[in-house]
Image (cartoon, rainbow, N blue to C red):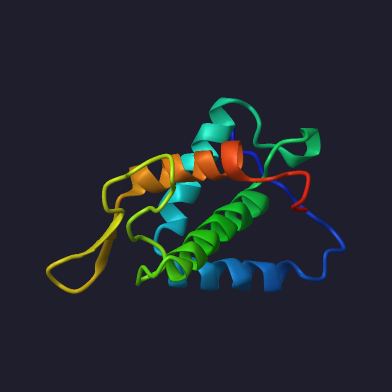
Length: 132
């Protein structure tokens, strides 16, 4: 069928993990679209299978959540309101606003900027020696 499935046995925390990801999806609107794009990115390079050392869906989603939480902390630290989706503060780059209020009060995100920031965070900024 061409559809890969990862099945785990004797993993008692599966339902809790699924519930956690669902709650993150509801509270972090950019999580879902970033997950789809990054899953495609990983699959197109054949680095999406955990059993061969790749990044699976659950790990990828947790990486995105961690990235979005990091951005929210940085926004608070530098006095920007709103957490995920505000002006990016990085000292090397000046991105356009990545979050704005729509006419109906919902927040719109510049997913392209978030995607580039994700790659920059894990490809350049993240210290793999000092951080788990």
